[in-house]
Image 1 (tube, rainbow, N blue to C red):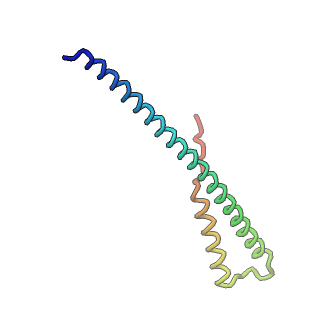
Image 2 (image 1 turned 180 degrees about the vertical axis):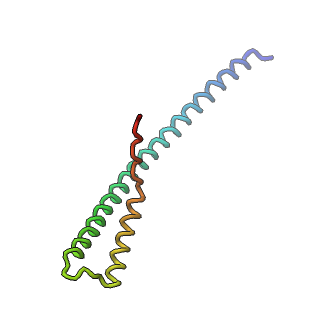
Image 3 (image 1 turned 135 degrees about the vertical axis):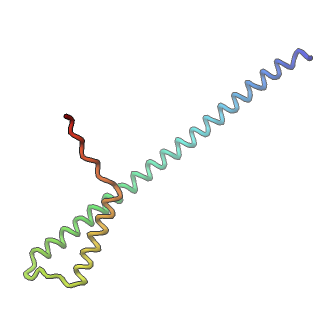
Length: 107
């Protein structure tokens, strides 16, 4: 057997290991970059949903105040349906981000 073969095999293994290490590092960097982009996108979407939620809750409260302060608090079927729909939309937006569970008291 040629005495250079073990050295060539060892060099090949070292180069292959180095190339694999570079590929893993590049893949890790790409994944981290995508995760960072995802985090930024999630923060933006959450902020928009929170703003929409606040606006809808405010609109529902304003409508409810108008109803309560009206001389005749009876709503038409259409107005009641619109208020019910708006309330349902506000609830569905609120349900997108579940409330934190109440802390369990420690005995």
